[in-house]
Length: 136
Image (cartoon, rainbow, N blue to C red; front, side, top):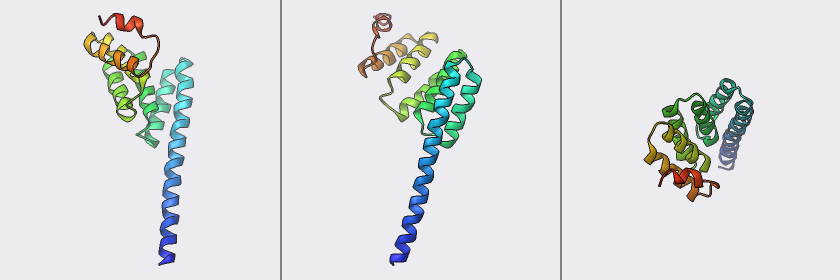
């Protein structure tokens, strides 16, 4: 019985370490993607975010990054979908609420924009006064 428990423990350890490696590798791709995104190479950033999502589809930062790329491309519906995935995975993701609000605003969906901006503010996003004034 001890031998079976030992083998099971080894298998669980291997499985968990594989998951941790994928999570860490996914986060690394997001960091690299961010460098390309803010370095004005959104195509390379998008590619890196996709690699991050292949390794870990539960990575909210990768979904946020792809949403930001879509925003930059003025593909607001796709941006909203990606920001929504980020929020689903990380419900207190203030920047995702803020940027999803921006996308709604650009689509002339002001009520939805205001809801998201208010949520970002409620979660602690500073300097929301100008956005929230548009909502009054």
